[in-house]
Length: 469
Image 1 (cartoon, one colour):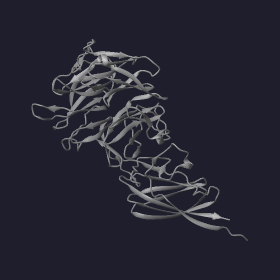
Image 2: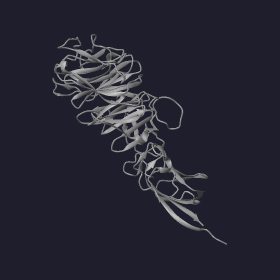
Image 3: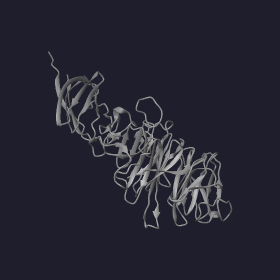
Image 4: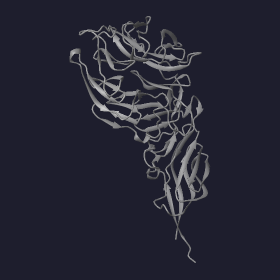
């Protein structure tokens, strides 16, 4: 009688730094990637349940200052850098757009609750800061509302002569704007006077262009030029002081529609989302960004927006987590490491003050911020990581998984799966632990899940016996 021999193999998951990837066929993915997962940071190789969100409060300006607005739902937040020349000190502010179409302001450098500002907008505005006649101002507008200027002290006023626009940027002391409606024109204000929109050769003006690139959606000042993001491409406007020398040239053609609210200057590059995935643009060439997220992001759903803070490109969007619904349900962080967070963030912006650079979020009608609590407004977040299936380079051999060892500092559950079934094992999270079980199959994967805040899990080892004739 012939008795089959047994070879024992230990599959060590020593590095999780690849992040979540849906780009390649699952059977070809290295074990450092996850075929699915969320709310785990993995840049150093271990799984850490750090990503969290809390109400915007302590740690910004005055300690324990609250930015909550009673009876209002916050839908947008903006940083207004301002310097008080009379007091010779910074007077930075945060502005909040609410569901009642109002604007509230809060002083970052002084105590006190947010207060109402005499501005209303029919939808969430976009804005830009500018130093006008020696005073810092913020200019807010929407596609249907007039540009409104506020200096942080006096009553706001509207620029009734200005065109209706879909985006704003400041370049060489002019204000550049993409026109609303048909989106075929780029407007620019008078030199050194962004409140003057009188069209003439030595004041304001516009450039109109109609071709297959689509309408102008977003104007961005970058690398000594104004870059115009269009429905299906990017154009560069070389715009120095003399408007007669302005020159428009086309640089990039996209196969998918560009989503303008995701266009963001990230240091020496501009990142943006299209219907075909994420891209990064350096002023000349465009390359793919985080292609492993192509199957995860649903660009035609939700309301994507992006910001650059703390060295990271943050994108809130709709992602495919295998669930029904509408609206944003994910925050993707691309930077030193790539992190997928399952969080219903509605809007993201950046605070870039002298003393702090951070992300500002709007979620559940609140102004919020990222933290490392591993919680969502004080509630534990579900965390999940699913490794690719592995056949240990013996696709046809029958195997039996028998032992799982891992090191964790918080409670977690690990489900070992094969094509023939699964076994769910619970770990107390008190250090190195071993669990014995028996599961037959030809290939195996691990699904790690936990709700423990600040969980750190490293180096799982799966012992597998391979039957050989």
